[in-house]
Length: 289
Image (tube, rainbow, N blue to C red; front, side, top):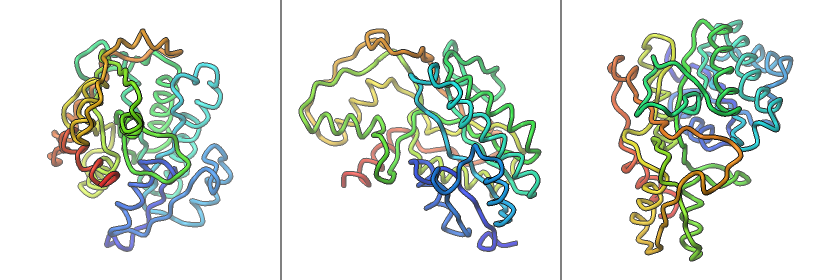
């Protein structure tokens, strides 16, 4: 079967990754995208109805509850979206004979290592991370043909009505002349959702072994270093003040080091991701011309 004859269902189309998945897969596939209004992924009956009617070849779950600081107080909602929904989608995918792709997070790790490979044992330090890990485990149970894709610190173009990602927030505050205090003791791998979408498509088409894959832009930095790079690319002269994570008094603990190494991609001989610096420059050119 040619790719143009294959059908891909993408859940979470209204988010930045869902937006980029839809525009990426439209080149070569018949794509149907669903947001939370058109498909409640926590409703097994609705999900099964859609999948049985559409008979897809590929199902991608880009939905997420990502309110890290609120997850402790909204644990039922976090588990419904991040654990129950992936299980429902994975089970429906298996019944339909479709390949299932689920997007997870660097926050399944505790931040005690310099970087994390796919073989490292998860150990989340907050309720959000626990909910994402539960989702991974349930996907493994429900779907024999799956890719679990862990990523980190996404930024990307998305439809209106969504909260700003970190890159847009820094750009907006800087252009407004606001003071910038940015955390310098949390290290991660910033990832452009457009690059991630393209690599997910490549992963599906290259047919490597099923399982867990880390997919982030290459390299790592602190949020402070990312903010400085944003201002540099945009030729903005604001001063950025480095501060510790503790000074923000966040409700949820976050891992100090959540750098993901794309080891499984390399082992599968899949081309490497661009650096986060290159990705950031392309994103800012697209978004702000």
